[in-house]
Length: 204
Image 1 (cartoon, rainbow, N blue to C red):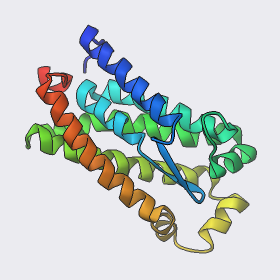
Image 2 (image 1 turned 135 degrees about the vertical axis):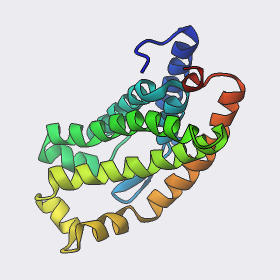
Image 3 (image 1 turned 60 degrees about the vertical axis):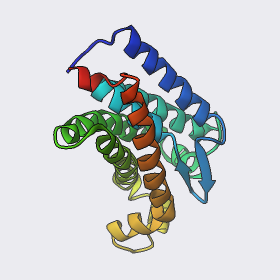
Image 4 (image 1 turned 90 degrees about the vertical axis):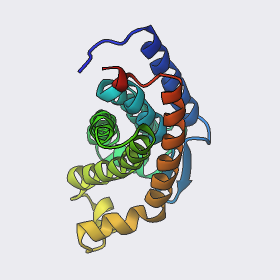
């Protein structure tokens, strides 16, 4: 795994960071619906994993996670759930918002490389985009249940249901929309980046 980036890759990293920050601090990145939000910020994370591999994906995932946590304290937007979780335990709120996004980006880099061995670039980008949304939701909700599952707030949300049933019903249409949008946009943009010879994983 490459540990350093060349100038072209650093430029790509900077551009994807800028895109994510623009999305995070404008309505482009979040659509708040109830306690959860439909987020498109997973797309720059997927594109970073595609173009820069696991390390690049993890870096952009970290930026996403940080902006998500800052919403818990009203910086760059507000998150109803985040604010409540921050009041319960600020450290756990940071972990729940930050770590899943870093892990998502890191794993996506390997997912793209693995799929690329059996499929063409565009298919690999589509699958990576889908996995970005799927893993983001999975890790986010798993961290929520693991860190806050015993709190009164989350117990009220679960309302006695099986944990898996709770997660599926809670994320609902939000997760479906994220998966569709991330799959299509990552697939199309990723293929364009491939044509521009900006996918580092293919150069190794």
